[in-house]
Image (cartoon, rainbow over all chains, first blue to last red; front, side, top):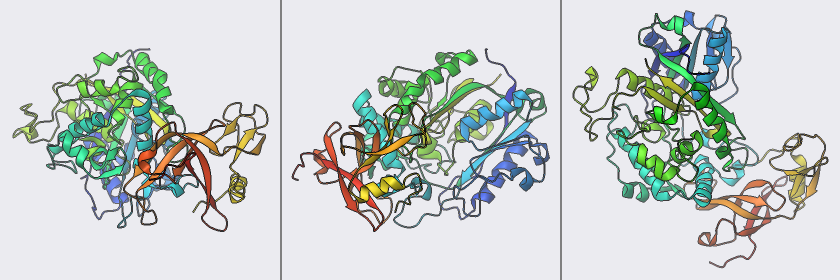
Length: 395
Length: 131
């Protein structure tokens, strides 16, 4: 089976991403959903699918999924599912290809209310075999990074270089939480506040408020939408255990065969792709993803990621600044798709004087536009023992 | 504080008695952690809570400098231990200078009472290194 242009992303929206917005998750997610539909030239009455981890209550905490989504919106849906990011796009695409849904929205986001001295709620779920150890999110993934260093030879310096590169993308993104806070050097990343060894603060995801939404539909419906379609060509997903629940390990490395099979099913070679939106929850992650996606062998990911990930490299990684520098609003998974769509559309805010008109200088001190991207990889969330990616292409 | 469920209560009764019990599959003999309803290897339902050696080696560890909340006093060491019986177990490591820890180092369980109902299962190096 080779790439078939049957399903497309036709609308995207991101609200302002900022710390302490004072807004509720519900208001942010509603804004993003309406914005994405307007971007597509569609309306809520056109929607018959909803894929999201949660329907936010008043305080944005991750709680039980509200199965009454269709009732909430006052219209019947053909698809309601609890997923996010690349996995949600793949699930929506499957339903659309099958004909059981036609226009699917994928909203995501959150609003933190963090008490002094505490880490954000979602970093310390009250699971009986985890919470007592104080193993917050950075500790969970620090364990994985430590083991990867031990078994596969990655290094703290590689993590720091990756973090500096991604932060330098966010540094020139006016929409990024860390806009203007760089430029960053390897030394600055290493010298920053230690969170859980080996991760210093800049190697860790941000914590902020905000929301986003993606609209996915069929090729037929896409014809009437406002922007050229961004085709969903395929991908893969694998589940194996749960962060916070199972003991962290390198089990996700075993997902490599399934990830490679996703490229093969779509008839796409790794070398044909350009942007790779690694899921950068922590700075070690692009290394593991380049290995598990099949771009390189396990053990080669450190050198490989650093070689390819720059804005002029073979596989630019997170030109928006990613989780580390652009936004982590509790459920930031849509941004891995949204940045690809915006780079394809040449809708890339940066410091180039002509950015708003789509005129870029490619001077990397001010510009984060990738030259002529056409075929990209968006990784799904690596938390909770999941790995996934989706392949996106423009005509 | 951990809240036991019917599935996990025997584990916590074990730690209260200073025993590290794991579910052992009655069909294939495999030990498992975290508590599950079925054997993760052969999917059989029948198991026995079985006392284990309490020994293992460090699979990975990290020193946490930023605590989860004021209830935690940093720095503290979070680790994954590879138990002799096979499974990986998330825990804290105590009783050693943090600089002395290494992946592969042998450790053994150390029980610490946290409440009337809950005794926690930390680990310490087998040959404690004086700071």
